[in-house]
Each structure stands twice: as C-alpha cells, then as structure tokens.
Length: 68
Image (cartoon, rainbow, N blue to C red; front, side):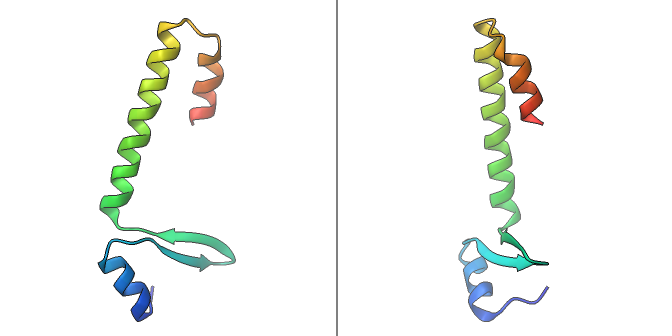
C-alpha cells in the first residue's frame, strides 16, 4: 500500500486515515489504536452481559446473538 505524504503524516501523528479500497470506504488506524478499541468493546460486552444476567433479562439471548 502506498500512502501520500499527508496520509503518512496523519499516521505518524496517530490519526485515522480515510481510504477507499475497491469502492469501499475504510479507515486505516495504528494497530495499538485498533487493539485499544477491541479491548474496550470486549469490556463493554462483558459489562452488558453481567447486567442482563443479574436482572435475569429475557433480552440476554437476543443480545448474545447480536454480539457476534
């Protein structure tokens, strides 16, 4: 992948870089940023499941199917 100088500078500064790949809008981010977001998503899923379990919520099953 070849980035233009502005895109390289944005990545160097830790900023997301919007790209179009095969007519699909994408965003290039640093691996550390991606991993941080993934960790936060997993923590959020765990917290939601815990709350739904505590309340014996019938929505838990639907939520788990939505989750992934």
